[in-house]
Length: 178
Image (cartoon, rainbow, N blue to C red):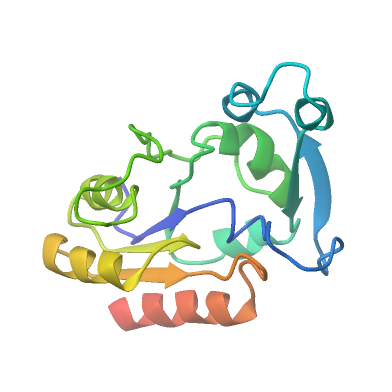
């Protein structure tokens, strides 16, 4: 275990700006993939299943993320498939730790984002940054009162993805921890 803070990464939104207005998002490459967890939720023989899931990924993100003083962990519904389908395209190792979410997409009784409680449990008091497009102020307040260590929930616009302002914020937060 590292003494560096955790950087918990979502894929869709931060790394895959799936709501981008332009099909060719600057610096990104587009791939059509068939991850089993996605394919199993598609109607058999459907056009969508035949075409595959479109993801837009930036090949430079991996090196940039690895240069940060964090221990990287996947916090995504892609779970282990992120190591297979996302990591090679953006230049990350294919063996990053994964938060294995249970009860995917099940609404939280208190209105939290369904990942929030498991993210806090995974961090187990360690400092962390959670990069996701779905976190809300409610999640921020919950983490502040439920997590023993420092935490930053960094909401990413799924139209833009992870960009320079967010990388600067990640660098600044790590410096502030030191």
